[in-house]
Each structure stands twice: as C-alpha cells, then as structure tokens.
Image (cartoon, rainbow, N blue to C red; front, side):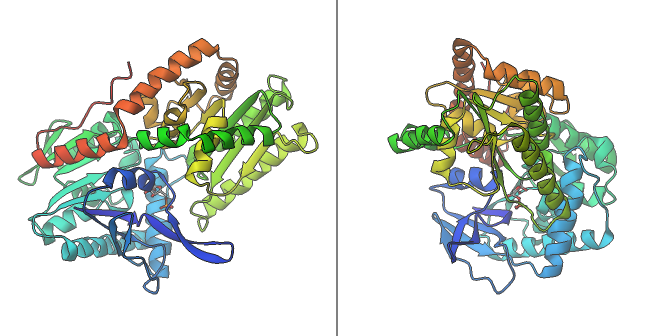
Length: 466
Ligand code: F6P
C-alpha cells in the first residue's frame, strides 16, 4: 500500500544543539502511524525541506519517499493555497480565505508532482491512500497515469457547506480531483453530504450521498470518523512511571484542587483565545481562585511562517499575560503556558493530572486530543468540555458540550465541569471510554480500507455512543 500525505511522518528538529527526526505534529500523523503498524507501507510526502534534505529510508517499519518543495512552492502551495485559501475556507471561514491565481497554479503543479511520485513507485494494482486538503487533485491525476490502482482519499478536516465552497474560484477542478478516487472519506456524515450535494450541483454527478455516478464511474462517499490508538494510550496511562509523573506535575503546580488543561496546535481555529478569556472572567468573578485552580495550556508550534499564526500567537500570549498579571501569586501562575511540543509520556501524564480538559475549537474535523484525554482516563474520572463544532462531539455525547462563540455558555460549562458530581462524572467518562475502546484508530483504518477494497461499504455510521 502507498500512503500519500503532504508531510512525511517525521520531521527534522534541533534539540540541545543536535538535529533529531521527531514525529510530525498534527492529528494526521499521530493517527495514521499506529493505524499502519504491521502493514507493508510506503509513505510519500514532504520532508519539511528542499532537495538538499536527506531523509531516513524508513520510520517505524514504513518506507519513506520524500517529495521536496522549493522555496516558491513552500510559499505558494503550502503557506498560500493549502493554508491561507483552503484551510480557512474549509474551517467556516473563521479567517478570510485569500484567493490568488499564482497559488492555485502552484497547487496544481505540486499535486502533479505527488501524483507522478506515486505513479512511479506503486506496484501494479496497488492500493493508494491519499490524505487531506493539500492533495485533493492527486486522485484524478493519478487515475489518468495509473488506471490499475485502487485509490482512496480521506479528508482530515471539515468539508464546508455549499455556501462557502462555492466561493472557491477553482471549485470544479477540486471536485473533479476528488472524484478521481474510488472512495472519498470524510470525518462526519455532514461533510460527506456537503461534498455529494455540491458534486451533484456543480458537476451534474448523479446518485446519492453515498454513491455518486460521475464520468462513467461510481465513486463511493462516506463518513469514517478517525480515532486514537486507545490500547497504546491505556498502556501508557497505566504505567506506574507515567502515573508518578502525573502526581509530580500536580505537586509542581502547587497541588491545586482543580487542574484545567488545554492541548492544541497553535491555530486560530482551535478557540484557545475563547478559553483564555473565559478563564480570565472566571478568575475575575471569583468562580475560580488561584489557590484552587490552575490552567495548563500547551500550544504546539505550527505554521510559524504564516502571519495569521504569528498574530494568533501574539494574541494568545497577551491574553495569558493579562490573566497571569491579574490573578497569579509569586511562584504560582494562574496559567502555565508552554509554546512547545510535548513527548507522548509527558502528554499522557498531563492528561492524568488534569481534572478538566478544555477542547474549544471554532471548527475542527475531528479533534483527537479530546479522544486521547478520554482514552487516558483509566480510572474513569475527569471531565471533558468539548466544542460542539468538532467532529468528536458527534461521538462523545457525554462531554459537556459548548458553543465556543458563547462566552457565558463557555463559562457555565467550565463551572459545571469543575463542580461535576464525581458519580455523574464517572458515569459520563465510562460511556465515553466505551466509545473510544470500541472505535479506535485501527478500526478506523480497517473500515476505510475494507470499504475501498470490497466496494460494499458506504462509509460507517459514528459508533453508538451508548
Ligand atoms: O489535518 C490537519 C493537518 O493539516 C494535517 O494535514 C497536518 O498533518 C497537520 O494538520 C499539521 O499541519 P502542518 O503539516 O501544516 O504542520
């Protein structure tokens, strides 16, 4: 099988004056890497640099094939069309998408490069799994080059409603690109329906929300909600060393009654500012006090060359400063803010140390942090405050669901989570744990690949949260 994604699963980082290959950030890599374990796989993607970058031949048993980008392509394809046109457009236009023809031309040419790399590398009749919004043209291009391949496409982010998608000047070639796949998968049924509807309207495709007839072929469409490696998280969370680290973290935080936690890529879609404003107001009105409660906010650096991301960082750091300036005491900050990525054991220790997890995106395809928190709470304690605008909210119905635009509602939800009756909290957490145990990332990959192969699946319904 060949996996194609914008990034390779590893990226080069400098630590302690030395270069290391670390796991790439984001949900795509954290989900896909364990899901592929044990299968013979080649992964084609960008190593984070140009032709000069020497990439290891394999990672965790996966053969790596780099697709380098030059500086202009990095600007126009990656920062431009992928992250300043498609990213905001597909996330409810929470920032205005920018439309530039030069960016589109770069998108077409880089997608063509990826398609050629796959066409050269794939064995006859191989299965190719193309991922995410950066590579939407690859299925059609690849089918023209290698009609023998079975091609699946999975979109990790939302697919917008017609009203937004129609803004895209290149909406037809994007849809045609996706319809080159045998199976197009989305995180939730709403996204799959948005896609099918717009394909019928713009391209004259016929059929239902689950099977489209287009260009003499049948294309299956479905929802395949991605998940986490539940067994691996449970194993780590049950490790005495990780549990000891969780206790140590609470001590280091000054043994507060309540530890609140946020973990996000630093991205304007994640609603981190809503959360900080709500927390500041809760300290201001006395619902939270520094002696009782602290917030730990991990913001993983992301897309630092994009001005929107730099502005978002400044905005968040100002908010952290304002809350800390008013409510910290010497040696005891109200908000512990870390602009850095965190190793998995430390992350699980943080999940174990946190009484309340805050996941408040304005829009998110799935949000795996919410599922990771639930999977890690091996004693079924803890409360999850979860934005209703995440894919995860459709499965984790026992979270305390919030509209992050509604600050008063968010404050009420945080108060509710902090004061949650332990019996009710355990009952909710048990039900959510059942969801992530039944539907883990291996089940996700299996269901997608089964639907791609047998042609019989029309996507899966989200797992029964009961
Ligand atoms: O699905 C979201 C996503 O864009 C992935 O494609 C990507 O791996 C992750 O977020 C991180 O983004 P980037 O590759 O731009 O750093």
